[in-house]
Length: 209
Image (cartoon, rainbow, N blue to C red; front, side, top):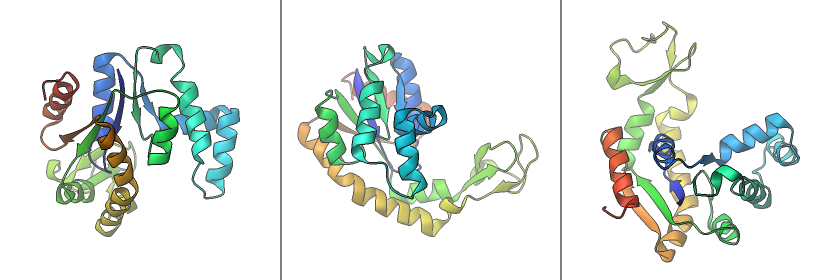
């Protein structure tokens, strides 16, 4: 099964992608994680990517496509894979189509007001990096796990969150339309319990949703 997950910041897409990949015993391929790994290894792809990132530029499509193309040819991806963070644009989707064909694209949809609530209420421990939501905390300043200080990340400030969602919609809508036109995109509401969302996605993948 060849899958791709798309969803806005804070939708829980990464959590669900990890769960679904484990369920089907296929690799969860995150383009961001791969880029960082390639740069740490100092591979040819990593060196090329680092050059662009260090200069403040986006990594070009041909570099990303080559990296993903190489990854999905590895042995553990022969019975399928789950792409997370790639493709990001319709142009990347077209390039991917020349390498392989996806079976389904899951669009994890969450209303903007819920996303803003999730992200602006997120707190991170400066010691152990544990993440919490204010609704779970009795003490908004102290990590219940290690006693470290909790803080609000700069990119979780409300005005930044709203701008991130705006940019996401503008950049991702053509991609969503691309896969809608191909008839392989399925929308899944990403609100409710984590287990419930996982079950909904599995039902869609197995033709029951």
